[in-house]
Length: 232
Image (cartoon, rainbow, N blue to C red; front, side, top):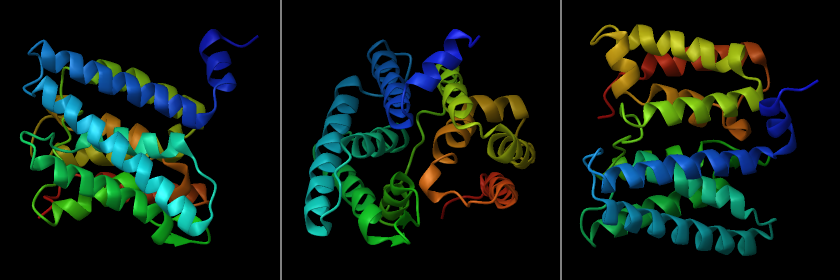
C-alpha cells in the first residue's frame, strides 16, 4: 500500500508539482520579506514577480504562434518563478526592464536554442546568465537560511517524483560540498549557498538532461565542482 506522500506524487503531474513547489517558495519568500526576516522589499518582490509572470506568459504566446507549437502555460509560469527566486529583485521601476528582459530571453531560448526538439539550455538559467553579462545577474536569494527548510522539503518532493537521487542529487551534493569546503564550512555552505535549490530544481530539469545515467552522474559532478567558481 502506498504511503500518502507517494500517492500524492503519483497523482500529480510533474509540471503541476513544480508549480506547487515553486509557488510555495515564492509565497514564503514574499511573506518573510514583509515580516523583515529577509532583507528584501516585499512590494518590490511582488512587482518583480508580476513582471516576470506577465513577460514570460506573453513571450511564450508570441513564440508559440510564430513556431505553431503547443502552448504550455505551466512551463512559462515555472520559468518565471525560477527567475523570480534567483534574480536580484528590482529596487526601482527602471530595474523592472532588466527583469523583463531576462524573462523574454529565457522564453525565447526555449524556441530558438533547441536540438532535436530539446532545450539546449535550462531557459531560466539562460535568462539569468544573459543579463549577468549585462551587469545584472542572479542573487540567488532563495539560498538563504530562512528559506532552507521549505526549499529542502519541496526539493525532496521533486526528487522523489523524478527518482533522480543516485544519478543526479547525491553526486551533485558531494561534489558541491567538497568544492564549497575549500572556502567555508559545509554547514555554512548549505545554509548560505543555493545548493539544495539548484540540485533539486535546476539540475533535474528533464528536457536538458542526458539520456544515459552514467553521463548524468558526470554532469552532476562537473556542475557541483564548478559551483564555487565566480561568474565573472
